[in-house]
Structures are given as structure tokens and as C-alpha cells.
Image (cartoon, rainbow over all chains, first blue to last red; front, side, top):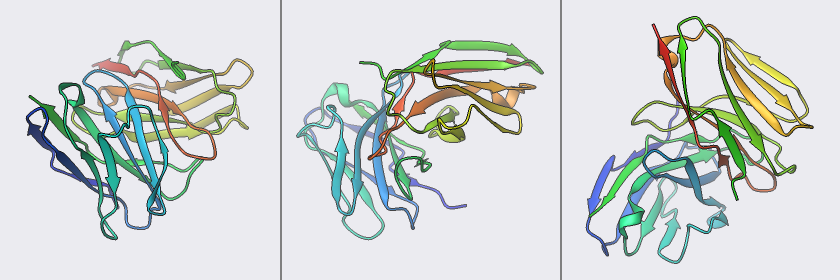
Length: 114
Length: 112
């Protein structure tokens, strides 16, 4: 069964450093998402991406964040200057369509900012 | 503003019992209501989902009940098993995009 993959599984970085989280969505999916989950809290939407551009973003997704689909398979989330409060589990998801289509989630990348 | 409210925060059920988790929403434009199951260290996985044009959907031991007028929906797990022990999240989305608004999660423990 196809699945979303994410690398790395755990990333430790120092405050102020840039990090790039990588995702390989399911191959025939057209919509891509990033969510985050602070430990013990709910999953929060960050951004959605379609046709090589951002379609929606939350207020969490400020100028420190960017997304890119550098090739036909990868989807990345970059945090330019990490803060302590960016420590969370980051989930990538993909779906074939919008409005009622299942989003398939990856296993997540645990980001720890020290 | 919390778009989707979920209760209870935690739930302990005996094996074979019924687990019930409730969610309420505010935005009447929501048109898709999935339930996700998450095991520790894993990403959320879709369990079952419903659209507001039906009042109930059943898949195996899992049932969603949907009350459009009350803006509430619930997950019922029949014959709960220890393997069902996980965190359950309700969610909702509305067109034209597909941003999911998640509830705060329910930690379910099924005691053998």
C-alpha cells in the first residue's frame, strides 16, 4: 500500500538554525500539507500546497516558514530561524483531491530545538 | 477560536465494552468529518469519515453518528479491544480548500 514517507524521523537543532524537513507524498496525489503537533496537544494545520503554490496557510505559518516541491517527488518544509517553540512533531500529508478526500499522513519528524 | 471541540480527554473502557467519543463544531460550512487514530510515535491514520448528508456510517466495529442540527458527531467503538488503545482525533474540513481542523484528542485505554 502506498504511503507518505518523511525524513529525518528526529532532528535536533540549535535555536536560530535553519532546518529542512522532507516528505515524499503518495505518487499520484495532487495536494500536499504540513501539520504540526506539539507534545500532548492537537494536530494543527500549517499549510496546503497545490499546483506548485500555497493554497492555504494558517497564522502559524509566518515568514519563517516556507514550502517547496523541488522535484516531482519531494515536498519540503523549511524553517529559517528556529525558535524553542518550534519544537513539535511535524506531519506531512497528501491527498488526491480536496473537500472530502482522505489525507494520508506520514509518520512525522520530531523536531527538537535547543 | 476552537473550531472543533472534543470530549472526553481520556477514556478507560473494559474489553468488550463500548467506547464513545464526542465532537462538536461551530462552522456550518464544514462538509467532511473524519476520525483519525494515532498510536504513539506514528502519524494519524484515517479510521472512518462521514459527510453531513447522512446521519450514521458504520464500518465494522466503528460507527459515526452525525447530528447536523446539533452540530455534533460522535465515534462509537463496539466490542472495544486492547488493540484499540490509542489517541483518537475528530476533524472537520470545508470547501474550497481541505484544511483539517482537529479536535484536541481522546486517549482511549481498553483494559483486558
